[in-house]
Image 1 (cartoon, each protein chain N blue to C red):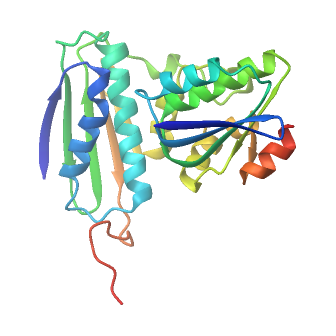
Image 2 (cartoon, rainbow over the protein chains, first blue to last red):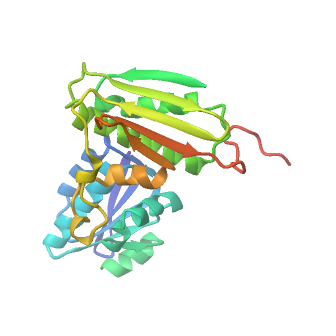
Length: 108
Length: 144
């Protein structure tokens, strides 16, 4: 898994490539812990696989962001990844957007 | 076709184990979406067996029985633990539990598989995936 972090219109964008699974989730969590921004977008366009530990990591990041008064958006999910969010009803917790640009404009 | 696998309770080998199982299933013409479901459920079951069943004691094995026919895939994951009662697990999709971590893997297994059954002790999980005939083969070449 690789994470490219950059700022876009005052929003911290994390572009994740690869798999978010039990082996890679701790690395993803570390990347977010380094991030002081309260406005975050996680672009999942290049994520083709995620397991329950990956979902739990994103929930944890959302919890932390919300507790700091911030907001977090997810973008670019494949149909399969999106279906896992729908099945687990996590799509109700997150701001889910089709594109990174849309997520940035809604989070900023 | 049947195959038995036995693996240590080591989370670092979960992905390799699921790849070995998917390789064994290679003769089947499976859609990517079905492969995703099988991989995810198998990895979730393996992680639970290693973590909660065997307490991450590496030397304690997790046993896998994988069997397939034209119409279904059957995977049994067995740990050496005292057993698990899935009824005691709170619904992870309840609003009050959405922020919690426990139970999402088991819930996904129940949603993505066609049949899910525990043995009486609760340390062996059978997962069955039914296969539809109209699957697009992953290993066939497209015809022009």
